[in-house]
Amino acid sequence: MKKRTKAGRQVGMLDRRAVLRGAAGAAGLLAGGWLGGGGASSPVAAAELLEGTLVSDLGEVVYDLALTPDAMAVIAATISPEAYVVQLSDGATIAELRGHSDDVNGVAVSPDGMLFATGSDDTTVRIWRRDNLSARVLRGHRNGVYAVAFSPDSTLLASGGEDNVRLWRVSDGMPVGMIPTDARRLAFTPDGGTVAVGGFAGLGLWRVADRTKVRDLDGERTVALSPNGQLLAAQEAGGYAVGLWRVADGAKVRTLKGHRNSVDSIAFTPNGQTLITGSDDNSTRVWNVNDGKLLFVAIDDQLGAGGVVALPDSKTFITGGGEMYRYMLP
Image (spheres, rainbow, N blue to C red):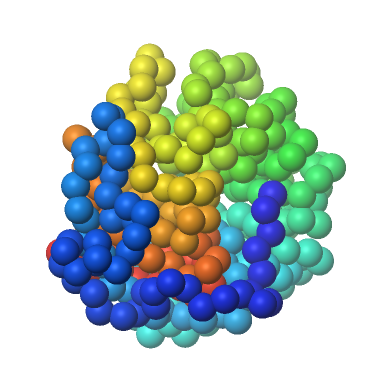
């Protein structure tokens, strides 16, 4: 997994706090097609540059974000052994999850809002109670853990890293199965019967009950499922485009072209109409799911977007990276 550090970073080509609106003005300053789409599958159109507002600077690079069900806070995985619970109303850190001995790479919140989960380079997974922050430690991975995800009914936890994907019973932390593939990001379908696994080795859908592969898709790394579970988004294999596939039959719906480096973060808005993608090219892009049109671009600092979460209004989203920023869609 690519590690990112604040040390020695350079000033970005444009501070994302600067107000710069309008396609003509933005296109004049950003060379190389930063504000355009590209390719026949992604309509080319100038996109508005979004202005972000600072939520919090934790002093560490943010790898991943998870939103609480009440949308009052996010959990941030950082380039440190700690994860942080950040209140969105004022950016205050209201809790610190301490116990790992190496960087925290992935975080998740149970759908019932009662539990947090963290995965770390120390090879362990921890399930934290939200009320008192006590933690259960899950051991079994041989390498660092990059991703964690709760099932929709909050009874199972999936964790993945360089070695494999493991399934755990949340009630007592017992292992209940293993999927033989690496994982960078994980996502359960709404019915909990299938888990999407995006890894360096590829992209696949796996049946939870017997851990058998349902199908391979031509993608890799990060992955997200639409709220209704009908579409899957991920970076396409061998490039930096984002693909959209139908979950039911694996057919590719469209390709979204524009990023110039690896796509690390993907999130659908709750209404399923918009897709947000964050990349190591230091941009976060907002796409129309129905036609693939690039709508907006946010230029991040030199660390890119480390985690993206969309709020219930489907207009507000939070990005990680060097700092945490809030963006509002018009």
